[in-house]
Image (spheres, rainbow, N blue to C red):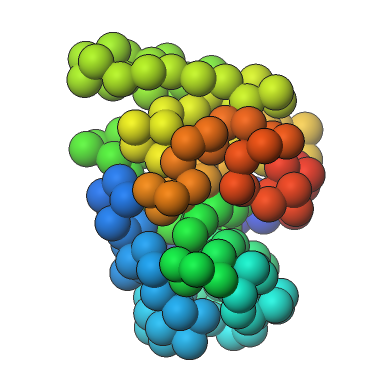
Length: 189
């Protein structure tokens, strides 16, 4: 299988991960230390490398190793840490990240308008609140989930950010929330 010209994995190349709000995303559990996160993604992603600041209020990008016919490697998952709780936020790269699902809803690498419609219907069905960031990203503080967008050449795809309970309110607020400014500025890769 080949990737498209912008390096976006096809669905069959993505690892399947599930999201349990405030508990876990795939093999990653909120509250883990950097070393625990690194060990968990090493087996799951075949991590070739990571970059960032490894602890406290830092971050780390974990890179997907060439696999499953992919012709490249690159960032797949970004972990955000909080000195008081450990792993507090997980952003999944729209181009190379695993496919994260919430009760069957695919969150990664989707057309933003389509995933927003499905997300809105899910929230209505579960009597949950829909919020929007200042960048018009749909968000649910009851799930600790923000559906951001990321460029893939001339296309924009969904990039979910899932957070620990301590970061959930107000996870939609780009200026007063706990999600680092680095994440709000991520639009390409």
